[in-house]
Length: 210
Length: 210
DNA sequence: CAGAATGTCAACCAACCGGTTGATTGTCAA
DNA sequence: TTGACAATCAACCGGTTGGTTGACATTCTG
Image (cartoon, rainbow over all chains, first blue to last red; front, side, top):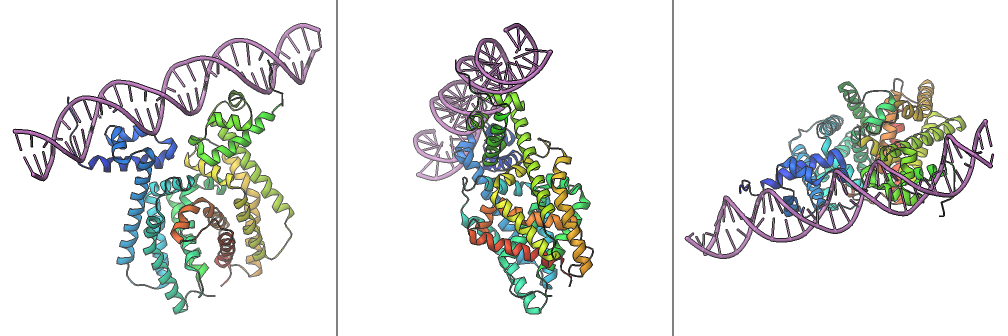
């Protein structure tokens, strides 16, 4: 009989991509193992060969996402040109918002991980190291801003980082409900641009020296 | 045979409460119809008698939640004493944060609704009317603050309301991931108190006159 | 009180779902 | 060339799941 072509570890990558899309779209419980295999073009059993279980597949997809975040953040802080602290914050927030806009799967998967608090344990180390480069950069920018007298001193970089992530991510998490609440179509390009601009201004105002 | 006691529409309420807890804890796909019935102490079929389907049950649970939000908001804006605009914002944000803290089911259900974008349509009208009283109050406070020269003028109340909700809700949405990112236990009382305080300060700073 | 409307349940079911089995075929090192 | 190993698949399975059926008891109404 015709056995399918070999692609050492190729099926693994195909499965991860399919899993990521499926889990993002339907959640862990809503996604179907067989559908993921079909989407990847391989037999269902191969999931168990590479990942042991549906949970294992989900965990692997999550880890891949955190790794991608880490690489993107690392690339940014290594390539960013020096600039005024307020401009640095603006650039960074615009980039974060824009990236979330273009990668809805990332938000969906992280959200799903949080809903199953700790069931698909991705090690704290992996999660933290995916954000450390960016967090350290933000802390440096805040300190620099304080030194120049542009920002208040004593701003807690952890709280500020939390604010940044909250404001940017939340837009894409509760888009449907907030559209109804505010009577606006938050999926429109105009709304996104306006919101992104506002978030930048809000964050900078919140740390600016009086 | 012993038929169970009658409780006209009582089973309906019992089912709604059980459904709310189950959907919040396990999501729509993770929750089991039979478990919900058992938790409510009634036969599974009664769900189909009152709600037609699992989807119908979910929709009813959501509507109940929006109705509760509306009542709570209405009660607040009708009973709140007049005070300085900045104090009014502080009080309101503290209350929002505290309520989310005590009612995790609300967040979980709204989140689930957004994940299934529009599949369990709760009418825009219901969603909007659950927030209108509070939104109007916030808009009045901002205008009053601007009139007194405490706040900047030209602050968009929609964006500000969005900020408030974002900062408060996000804490409880991604608690697990953010704990790892920041290296803090965000479930601790101390973290919550500190975060609540920071959010108040951040929001007020973002609208205060220069 | 009769009968209609309402509320409740036990038993059933077909489809589905995550996971297993066992066999088969390329691939590569010795 | 050969034998071990990596990769793949078709077929199968037991348990689960949302949903249905039909009968029956209680309550309401005229």
